[in-house]
Length: 244
Image (cartoon, rainbow, N blue to C red; front, side):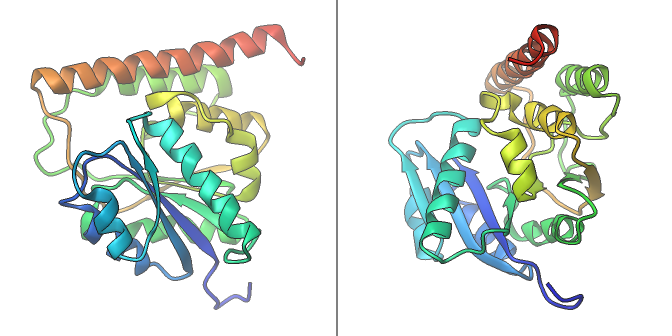
């Protein structure tokens, strides 16, 4: 890559029932310089998410039923490998994970790409401004994630659960297979640091749908807490057992 050329990057967007937002999100990431392909993983949607994504020219992977975020991300990486075998994607292209509900603000995720392309970091993580309509409520999960990462690695992230992340090939290799469910970001962070790779948090002006305060939102937060705790527990067990 020359100093002024755009790096090659493939975008992976896990999505469930995002028919109202997926088109604008795809258009947003396509405005990022160097985006070679956009892969949307429709994780058991019951609306028209897959059809809209295909209509926007994205590569679409469909799950007949919902498998959860981590499995959707792994399916996206599977399609990325297929695109590389077909010669449609550079072997060293970075992988940019983007939430499906960012709409036009998704273009701002492009700030994550250049530090990876320049070799300044192997994993970049977006930090977001306060979200419009935010009702809070994530304190317990965020605190668990941050303290767990710090305890195991010595590094304290600003936003440990941020899903917008750009990974080098080395970071993908270190972080896969991903921790289950909502523990994917925490597991990824620890695994990348354990491999001796570098992480950089990058401010990005992004807006997405916030989790509310109704009972469904509380169930979601409980699932997040469970999966983060499991991801941390697995990695603590690995530390105790040592190398295989």
